[in-house]
Image (cartoon, rainbow, N blue to C red; front, side, top):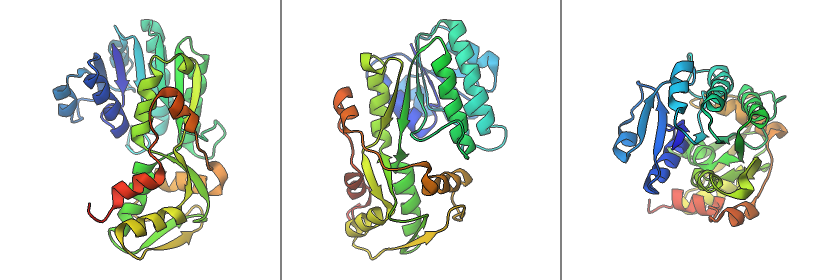
Length: 287
C-alpha cells in the first residue's frame, strides 16, 4: 500500500491517478474540506486528516509500505504555513512512518534548495530532506528544477492574456533549468522500485533556457508580437502569489541556475518533455 501526501495538489494528484491506473492500492491523506471526489472515483482509499494533526497522520500510516509526499503549505496561507506543513508537518510524518514500520519515502523537494537559503520554503524543504537522510527510512529525494506548468504556462500565460508585455524579475537572458510536472511524476513512480533510487537524491531538468527565449518561442507559436520588460529583484508582480515573487527574486539573484539531466530520464526509462516542445504544445495558435 502506497500513501500519497499532497494528493489534492496537481503533482500529487497526477501521481495518485497513475498509481491507481497501474492497479496499485493507494491511500491518500486528505483534509475533510478538500474536494476528494476525483480521488474517490478513481479508487483511492481516503484517510482524512492533516499533517498538522499527529493522530490522523499516525492512523494514515498504519498498514502502509511506502510514502510519496508532494505536500507543501507554500500557497495555502493561514494555519497552513510553510513552517507548519513543510517543516513540522513532515517531521510528524517521518515519526509516524518510522513508528509504523514503513520502509520507504519519496519526497519532492527542489533543485537549489539549501538550509541557509534566504527563502523560508527552501530552508524548510532542505531541512526536511536533511531529516529524511538521518531517518531509518530508505528514501529518494527528488530535486526538480522550475515547473514549466507554473513558471511558463502560468507566469507567462497569465500575462499575455491581458497584454503583449511579459514582466520578468531579473535579467531576461539569465538561464534556468525547467521541467514538466509530468516528468516529475514519471521519476517519482520509476523511483519507487528502482535500485539506483535507493537512498538517493536525484535532480531533474529537461533543459535550460531564458525567459527571453521562452517569450520568443511563445511569440512564434501564437503569431503575436510580444515584449519583455525586466524588473529588479525583490519586485512584486501584482496578481502573482507572494511565494512566486519571492522565489523568482531568489532565482534571479543566483539562487537557481541552468541545469539539464538527460541521463536521469535514460536511466529511469522515460522521455523528457523539452521546454520548446512544451511551449509549442501549450501555446500553439490552434489551441
